[in-house]
Length: 425
Image (cartoon, rainbow, N blue to C red; front, side):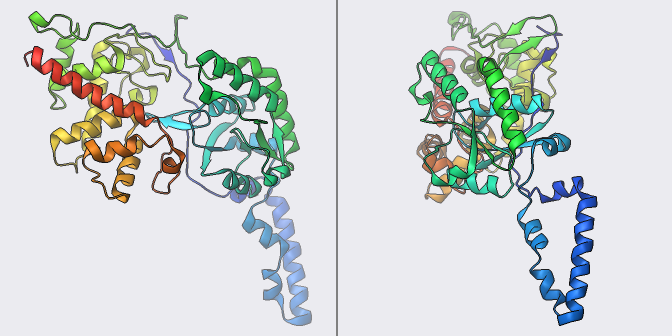
């Protein structure tokens, strides 16, 4: 498909940096605030004349207290004028997670579409638990809690719940369709908005009712070509060895041999990785939107200079993958053993370097060697889908499916060993 421009929705970048929202609100109410400040200064001057307590009066000012805590009255018009919807959520497979530098999660992908409908971009603020979600939204640090909430918590009674019927119906249908009990909806699952944001609450409720039928489409990766072709998840399995007697692993051995020289790898290792990624199908598309022989994500393709129009071209795809491998090699340069470093490069390629760094941080915390994969870092990679581990303060990138990364590294290493036995270098 070389030369075919592709359209992949990447208009809503994630950011986990935290900031108060009082500053941006002042941009919309400067005149009003100046008037309030003038009145307050006048009152302080009068107090100083009568009791000499002007400075103490300023410290007790209701305005000063409100400004430090942030103004909670931030409704739909303010969000639209500012152009940013801040969603509060928890890490998890159906709420929000990062994969190879892209943002995913069923709830996230739905609320992203709502933001688009009101002309706003999305910023994600991830909390560690439901109480923290409540504190953040009540402090004005976010607009919507977009994950399945438990309404049994007495604190949540102070919020408006939105979309209970729509979310439960969608999650129940998805669970049945995928035959995955982990996706079954929680009882009374809903999103939440502050009661003092009635316009936002009404807008969100109406949108969810109107677009419930589209939730499946919103959460399914599709890549549209200019010619009208839609790439949906597919993978055509090829033989792991094309012709052992002639020393041929795949139709793309020439590409692997040339490109492996650029990253200092055995070309058979690169071939083993390609088989794990796409089964040598250059048109492969994953459920997460990864594309081509080496399954480049759209963000990764941009990072390594591969145009989306060329991402299904085997030469361009493998060349981009090798550039990314070199970046990971630099990232893990402190791991002195080059053979050991391969494990971390493979893991970082699969899950993203940030997730692997989190597993290394936990390995260090629990007395394991962060520079050794087997029996050390891989132990914590396997635990990164468990709340008690991905919610620890050392973990910066949250949940990921560590079992997939663990199997990914082991499968490639095993296949590489087989290739070395049957195919000459």
